[in-house]
Image 1 (spheres, rainbow, N blue to C red):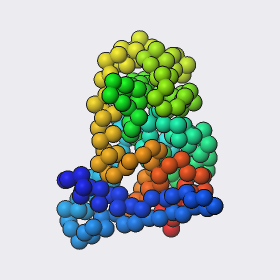
Image 2 (image 1 turned 45 degrees about the vertical axis):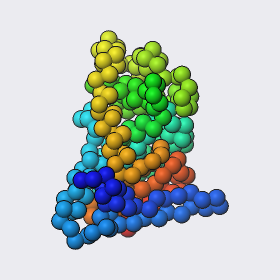
Image 3 (image 1 turned 90 degrees about the vertical axis):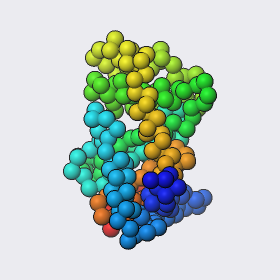
Length: 237
């Protein structure tokens, strides 16, 4: 399936946009380009599976696996607005929707801040999957965003990433260090990044809300909690 077709198929979604003085959430149909095409229907199912399934077994979604709604964040560990979402919004969503069993929360890498010769975003994401090997994916994810110092500043290094692993009490730091040095998950991070681009995402953080039988909704940016609340209410209705 060509990328241009996939963009039309999946993120023919209008994005929820926060405007000065208020908010506006706009949503459109999945597969709107040709709703009668069996091929489009098959591709839609495949893409929805990619959206809602964890990247690896040990990086599962937060929340009840039986929850009908999945909220997927596409983020970069250097992204200051991703860190803002982590500090100001994510906790409210988890307390009010994930803890109640209504929503699952999933994260996928979109490494927009990598530069030629400086793959710090990829390196941090690799570190998260090295932590996942030892059951510490979300602890490490939180540690990265809690220590964020913005974009393209030298806060992400192999040494700082190993220090973060110590901070969250990784059981086997030697194993973590070996994993990080080998960068064995760099191809996995690249696959996530390519997937985000292939469905038309261009910035971080970006979010997609998915529930069976409804059109996915997208939210772009570290929007106020009220925008997420509105989108969840819309997809439930």
